[in-house]
Length: 171
Image 1 (cartoon, rainbow, N blue to C red):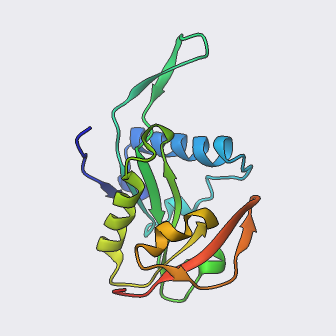
Image 2 (cartoon, helix red, strand yellow):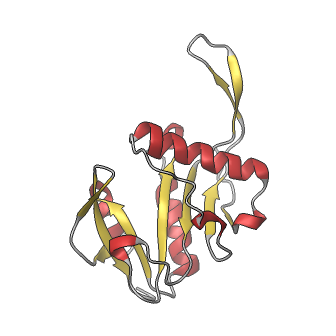
């Protein structure tokens, strides 16, 4: 698959199809796959300074277990949101930082480097300022490769171990 251009938009700039795809992916990964029962639509997505970053994928027909068409999936290949500066995003919070959150890769595209490419795009676009995130602990090495280091003790969220991490401005 040739590389599509990354999308970086505010909530108001998202099309209905893009927003639906983002919600579809986040629900599939966080609620269904990771079995985290939480209200994903937390209102933070709509804040004027929140940015939604993703690589779009072509629409695909969804089928049920019997092969009958049941709808269309417009889930992006990979997605992350960049929170407003100084938004208190849990243990990783540091004053003046923007936090990367809700990172999710479509299971159909895992292992192809899309997550690496999206995080690299966010660091390139916003790495002149302090960046933070709450990494799932098994992904700590992945985020270290972008200059993030732990900035607090590990913690559990929704039954998953996390490590708060920060990347200094220009780091």
